Amino acid sequence: QVQLVQSGAEVKRPGSSVKVSCKASGVTLSSNTVSWVRQAPGQGLEWMGTLIPTLDTADYAQNFQGRLTIAADESTSTGYMELRSLRSEDTAVYFCVFNALEDFGLDVWGQGTTVTVSS
Amino acid sequence: EIVLTQSPGTLSKSPGERATLSCRASQSVSSNYLAWYQKKLGQAPRLLIYGASSRPTDIPDRFSGSGSGTDFTLTVSRLEPEDFAVYYCQQYGRSPYNFGQGTQLE
View 1: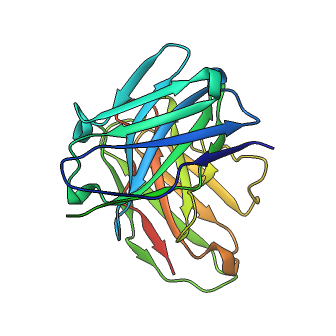
View 2: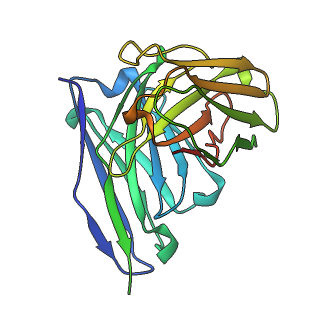
View 3: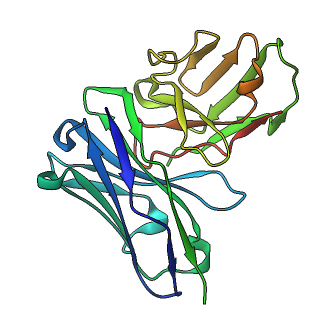
């Protein structure tokens, strides 16, 4: 069964960091891209960045340059998203998504992780 | 960067009707790498269309996509009750892989 399971909800203080994991089963990191998308309350979908594990290269949205790292660990079939210097506007549901390198239409999504930034 | 503008913002329809949603890009989308997603509250986005007009095998054929260059359309031929949701387009031809702002189908 192909699925992505994300880590649990987080509550963070402004200025701190959060790291969300995305464990894959039934699908290999090396044959996919790993992307992160978020949705703030009442807002639309926002692309954050994409990693190609086989090339170890990542592309990030300008909004997150310098604050965001997307990584992957092939040995544990797990993708990660770390966002630093958190602010209240980072309160959102964060999704990981795998897309097959050879076919964008073969995708699988995590269930979403709620991150709340509050003092 | 490519900006995607979706219209209308809200579309009011009834079950059984046809719905047409638009996505316009500020520049030509490379290789027509344009996707459509359905988003419901509390759920992950669901990919409906990719490559402007291709449909994943598990998506009903009442969903279809068309267009090229800068103008793209998602059509739902006959609305079912479960189709009422928010729809987003995304271009994945050139980074940043932006989404449109969404169309609420009510």
